[in-house]
Amino acid sequence: MKRNLRTLRDERGQILVLSAFVIVALLAFTGLVIDVGYLYAEHRQAQNAADEAALAATYELFNGRSVADATTTALAYADENGFDNSGGSSTVTVNIPPTSGAHVGDPLYVEVIVSEQPPTFFIHVLIPGGSTVQARGVAGFPLFPEPYALVVLDPDDCQSFRQQGNASLTIAGGGVMVNSSCPSDALSKTGAGDLIVEGSIDVYGGYDVGGSGTISPEPNSVSWTVSDPLASLSPPSLGSPAPGSSGTAVNPDTWTVTSGGDFTLYPGTYYGGFYSNCTCTITLQPGIYIMAGGGFSKAGGASFVGDGVMIYVTENPTNPTGDGAPKPFDLTGSGAMDLSPPTSGPYEGITLWQDEAITADFKMRGSNDLISGIFYAPGATLDISGDSQFGTVQLIVNGFQLSGNSPLDLTYGEFRTFEAPDVVLVE
Image (cartoon, rainbow, N blue to C red; front, side):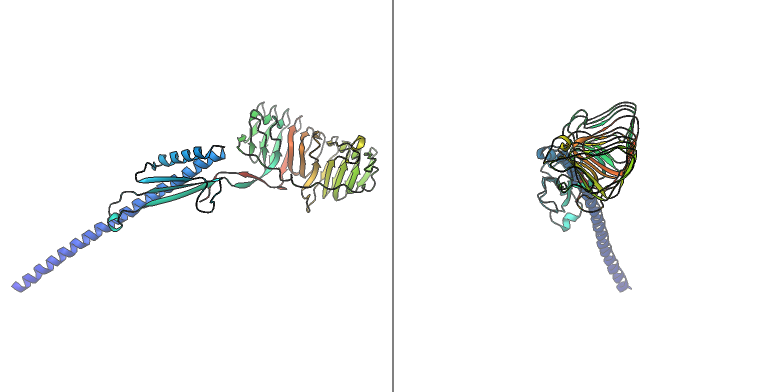
């Protein structure tokens, strides 16, 4: 009996020892779970701080601020998130440009690294010195395609985009970009006409919106401009006179059509340009039409029909006087223009091209329905008044003016790509 009692006491002692070990192990495990959860939460907070600081600094660069300003902003945002870079438990490193990752050395990107050694309960027993939490955020402003249906290239003129009177402009599927730096009214809209754009209205300079007409969306003041995607494109070379034309390089002569009936034009060089003032239908065969002097004018009831057509107006370099002098597009009258551009080759997508050296207004003052493609006038203002309804187009012009009483509707066509920067988190 005594032996059994001693055995029982020994077993009870062993149970107490085992229980103590189990309790300590449970407490240690619980402490580790708490520490791991705490470290995870700290890491999330550090990551948020790094991301927000990188984005804030990038916006500073995007808006033209200095690297020093961007660095100060990044440190301030990190401080607001609990990482003060005071030399204590946390440090914040700002690298402009980044020193690691996919954007090393790129001045359009900002790298922010947040490190902290937070206090823990048990993990420091297993890891001498505790555990360090580190997070990294990288932001920048790379270029993205923008669906611009109308781009006004002029770099500094006020009212380079001008809409006035009762005429409304509606753009489906795309937006507007105005490159002018004029601080007061690079874009000016007055009168009762509406400006309704499905995409964005981006203005590098200032804008002035008045009158009773509505504007949607509200214009954005942006800190960048877009480049002309056609600037490096070589114009077509002048060649032999087109079949049926009467002018030559030495003796330019404007081909004039004033009688009724049906006419056919063929690709080639028209020395002295082309003028029509008739109640007639003029069919353009597919190809490139070069108006070397004299411009391209339409009046009266003349209607034009043609697919795969580009018309280029320029000067006659051999004899740039009289009918050989450079003149712009002048499209008036009641006849329609049912034209579409080439679908391949270097001039793919371009329907009407006015030489950059011709600064006189590209005028559209009649019923010019169903034109599609690019209208390209890098040196002139596209001046529209009248009852024109375009098809799928891109307007790339030095200036733009819409007036009168009739609405203008157009649909964006992605004939050329424009790229604009946007601030994004990339790593």
